[in-house]
Image (cartoon, rainbow, N blue to C red; front, side, top):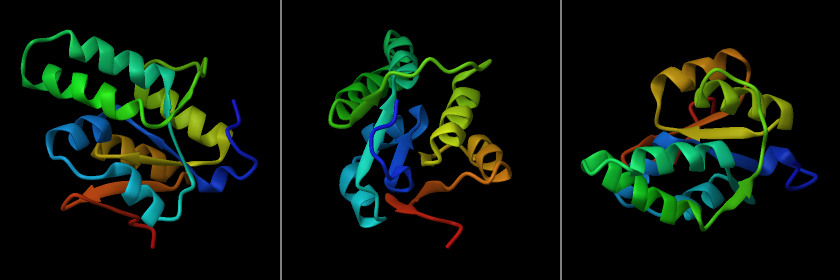
Length: 132
């Protein structure tokens, strides 16, 4: 499951940030590199969630399908992680791997921060690190 020996330079993308990057285009990869991350990955369960959302023919479904195309540019973590929902799985995976998470989901951001996991979020189509 480990992508590199230095997981402090690894960031996991969640469903929400991928959909956001499809709906309000910006270069997610260059933003992660600007923040100092050498590896960007998407867990397989996030891809599954995007596929599920993408089955809808509404606006969110359209953006989920675009987000799947964006996600193909990043490494995939084929992780079998226990959890009641995708957010819990992301939290457990990030904790286990000792890496950061990029999200546009406020509730997930709070959960991750309360567990001491580094969180990156969006502000004006830029990735920021609220912890400094």
